[in-house]
Each structure stands twice: as structure tokens, then as C-alpha cells.
Length: 269
Image (tube, rainbow, N blue to C red; front, top):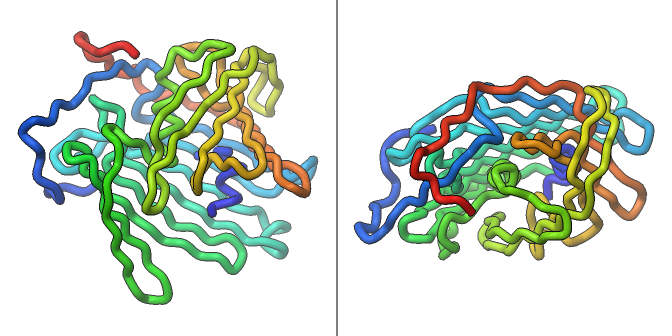
């Protein structure tokens, strides 16, 4: 699934769909890592060959089911030379609860060669359930099922991880939903390294995320992510190792957003 975006990240609506459980309590978590207006650009390379461009951005604030949310978007687009071999036009969108930093809604529109995929998932966090829709050959298929509390989608999981106090040698686990299933995502913090990308030289933490099922982080092959060793945890370099080589997404530009709002009574992880 979404192989090209894996290399790049590798990354509302109003009106309630769900009824909130009266026993539910939304958590409050701090966020000093990202905010509205943040934009990151990448060049995607296959070996030394430029293959395309990718972006990740916090494009605004929107309300989903009565909850303020960050509107996140990642895109990947192959260049003209790669189009002739394997054309890619990928978009992932996520709506992430501002207060609890969990997924509220996710959309994916993928074109990779002859493969096409269009899906949408709505998350009922108070009831720990999801509704998953996919469209194929003009038909809509709908699935629903249980999730774990405060589950993430494949895009919001990276943004959520950026808010962690990451320490070398530790492994962090969160639950990520992909398609109609939820999987544990294990993130190993391997080392501190200095890396050089087109945007500059950065002191980074080297992460190795592993997801046991289908998703942005795959157990098949290997994904490595370098994030800045500071409060923002900006992903500056992403490497997806596959059977026939590796795709690299190297940061070409970084535009910080507004100062992140931090709740006074936030719970610390």
C-alpha cells in the first residue's frame, strides 16, 4: 500500500457522526512540536536518482464532530522522468484532535502506476470504534469495528510521535489503525547522529518504526527516520529500504508554524 509515500514519510467537516459516551473523558496532552502553518518539503531519491517531491503540512484548524482538530496533509508526486516508468500521485489527509492528539478522521487518495486506492475512516474515539469506507470500480464498501482508545491513523501517528520525549535506547509503542484493523506501532530510538540534507545539517535522533501489519510503517523491508534532536522533532530524512535498493526523502525546506498552544493542565507522558 502507498509505497511511494512510504518513501516520502517514509508524510473537515462539521456535524456529528457518532454519539459521545457520557463516561468518556478526553485526555489533555502537551504539544510543543508542531502547529498550524508548518510546512516541510522533501526531494525523493531512488539511490542518487531524483524521483519526485513530497510535502507534509499542518494546513489549518477545522472542526470534526464538534472537536477542534489539526488538518494534516501529506503528498507525494513523481517527476516527469519517473512518470514514464511509475507515475505517482498520492495524498493523505488526517484530522487530529488538538487537545487529545488522537485521530478523528483520515482520507487517502493514491495513484501508483496502475494501482489506485481511495479510502476514508472516521474514528469514534469515545466508543473506541471506527467506520472505514473504500471506493473501488464505482462501488462503495463500508466496514466498522473496534479500536483501542486514542488510536492514531497512519499520518497522525508521526505527528503524535513528535510530541514524545524521545530517548536513545528506548522503544515507544502506540496503536495505529490502517484499513480495517489496528496494529501496535513500535518505534525504536537507535542513536544520535548528525545528518546533512539539502536544507542543511542537523543533529538528529535516528528512529526505526515497525508496524506489524499494513500501514505507513511496514514490517516488510525497513524504514528509518531521522528527526531533529530538539522540541520540534522535525523529520528531516526518511529512508525506506526495499528488496531492490532504498528510497530516500530528504528535507529541502522547513517553514515553522505558529507557536504551539500548550494546555496548562496537560498530562505528561
